[in-house]
Each structure stands twice: as C-alpha cells, then as structure tokens.
Image (cartoon, rainbow, N blue to C red):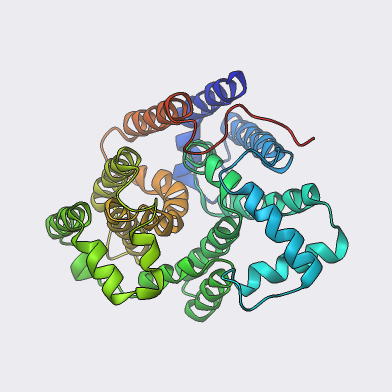
Length: 367
C-alpha cells in the first residue's frame, strides 16, 4: 500500500503544479510556446515530470506479476494458445488482438515479454495522444492515473482499442472523417465494443443544446437499468449476449457504478456549460461527454456497459482540462483542484476497502 499511497501523493503534487498560474499561461497560449522565459522553463519542467511519471506507470504495468490485474492470468493463458496455435476464428477474441498475440509469439514465447510489449503499446500511444492534444499535460495525467491505472493492468484488448480510438477521435477533430472511421474500425478489431465510438458522428447540435432533456433521459435510463427492465429488453434483442444479463456482471457493483455516474454527470455539466456548439471541436467534445454519461447509467443493468464508456472517459482525460479553462467556467482552477482531489481520494479508498475490484494490492513484480 505504501507504493500506491506514494504514487497518489506524487499525483497530488503534479495536480498542484498543473494548477499554477504559469501553467494557465501555457494553456492560454497553446499550442504556441510562450515567450516568457520563466513560463517556458516551467513548461519544460512539466513536460519532464510528465514523461518521468508515465515511465514509472509503464514500468509498474509492464513488470507486474500475473496476479496483478483482474484478467492478467486469462490473457497470459490465451497468449500461449494463440502464439502456439495461430489465429482461431472459433474463439471470441477479436482477430486484431489474436494477430498481435501471434506476432509477439513469433518473436518470444515469454509471457512476461508479452506483458511488456502490450504495456508499451498502451502507454506509448497514450503518451503521444496526451502530449499532442492536452493543453495541460499534468492535469490530464492526474485524471488518467485515477481512472486508468487499474484498467491498464486489467484490460489488455480494450486498452489497445481505447488508444486507437483516442487517435481516431483526434483525427475526427481535425475533420478527417474517413481516416477517423478507419481508425475506429481498427479499434473494433481489438475490442468489438469500440463500435460505440461511431455514435460520435450522429449527435446533432440541437440535441446537445438541450441539457435538461439529456439529464432527464439519463435519469430515465438509470431507472430502467436499475429496475431490471433493460436486462429483459437486452436479452430479447441481443440473445447472443444474454449470459451477461444473468451473470456476475448483472445487478452488481452498484456502488462503483454510482460513483462513476456522479463523476461523469459532473464532467458533463461543466462541459455543457463550457462548450461552444458553434465550434466543431468543442461540439465533438460535448458529444463524447454526453455519451460517457449515458453509458455510465446503463451500468446499473450490466456494469459492462461502463466498459463501453471507457472510450469516452479516455477522451475526457484529455478534453476536460482543455475546456475547463476556455473562459466560460468561473474559478476553473478551484473546480479542477476539487475534481482531482476527489478522484485521487477515490482511488485510494477503493484500494483499501475494495481490493477485490481491481486486484492491484498488494503489488507484486514479475518473478
């Protein structure tokens, strides 16, 4: 636990550094580099701190024992199968992920090297995307730590899919519709749930303007989910996935789902105020936060729905600091401090009171 407490304290310090006025000056001038010597020097310091922090998180993910992370042992078991037997179309694993296993298996049969390669893919992709698109890298990194450290330990297929989807989102922001669609499709080859990202193309500005309607819709969906009605509808319409609606994923984890719903509702409320729907990029960001909220309330039916929302949560890690400081939110530094502090506290409380949720504690290195 000392390791995780130390990491949390370090992230809190990065949060404070990211909220300095010099950091705000960088945000205001992004992506241009500031002329002020002191501000420019602080920017370089923030960059170095972010790189070192990401390197530490990568190291812990890459060199973890097979007991760390909910499904690590399962992924290692299938790595052995795919690397020795090749692609198997009868299995439920997506073809892109199977191909990656086979490719790694051609180079090494070591399960530890497999974890190192996958961790490198996820963290290198995340780092490139964060540095390319976040106006305040330290705030984004703090949010990433709280929301995704445990997920990167556990979700190998979806972790890769999320990184690809993040690049697709950034391409969509630049107006590269075809390129982004191809990248979203590539993400589905690693985890089919990435198909939900195509919803970003279809949310009209007229709907996004109706904040009250969206909140009422989210409340209604939460009631449908918690009452079991959505489970019945899902089993009728999607018989292939009926087992999810009656398994351990159904009607469980209400406390974790409630936390995510409240957190995502706060995100949505801030961004719905901050986003200018006349700006294509900000409209796209609001679309992402809206979908994040809607998928999180479906978690009351089957908490795997929250997994689908993780694509939009990774986008939120980048976009929340960007939009909070665009001048439409009063006291943004205070609000970001409160959001970051609550998320850091939640990370530690979860480890202490619900260690079985993520299987991170006690941490063990690969032996």
